[in-house]
Image (cartoon, rainbow, N blue to C red; front, side, top):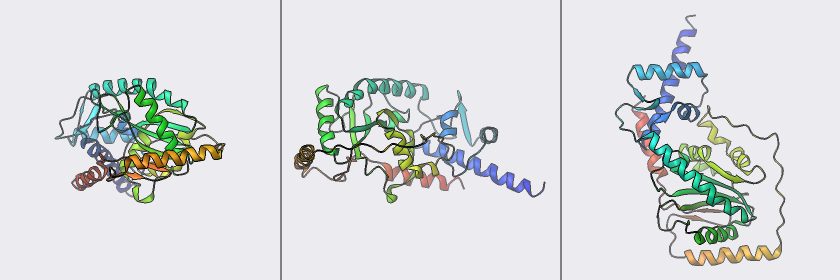
Length: 295
């Protein structure tokens, strides 16, 4: 019994800290979390059973380390945004996205279209722009991007120059040979984006393949559960020489158009990331500074 008590206290302390770390991360966006969100996206290298987690949550509320209003949790000292309002806006934008982004099914080489960013995180403001992540067939990235641009531009839904107004920022596209995130970019911010994305459509279980390729993200969120298919079928490729020529032409044409405009963007044959408004590094730095105050 005496041996068990120190272990139990250590476990309680660990769970308390995980909850505070998770709410510290959400506090960077002034965002309160529902019970479901907090338990699903708990920043932890360990799993905790349901009752144990609830006890930790109640203990932290009782000690006034965290607050709970209308079953939404946030750090004491934070003035949170309206969860209900952000939920309403996010839901509306996701609904709109299904309506328009399913048009991209017409592009035969697109394998996954998913929403990321504030809309996927349930934290959108009214008429926010919508971040879109796209996976294509190998060696069909630039051709796919060309048709994505044509389709969305034609319906006035392609965001350019940081404009919002419910338009789509297709700022991250990869082909299926480059879906595993580089080791030096594997961090808590990217992990949250990956696990929180909202798939609009996929082909051949590409969504599950992508998560499977990036299981390192689950190390940050041990409570997050996903049921992978028993097996993944290999994608059938039918790469004609003519379409290969079109891919090269599309890449050359778009690179020429972007010449002199590229700053911090990452552009190569299998990965395109237009990250002019990428605040991930500052978010991680701020988060790390915050959690130092918890220890």
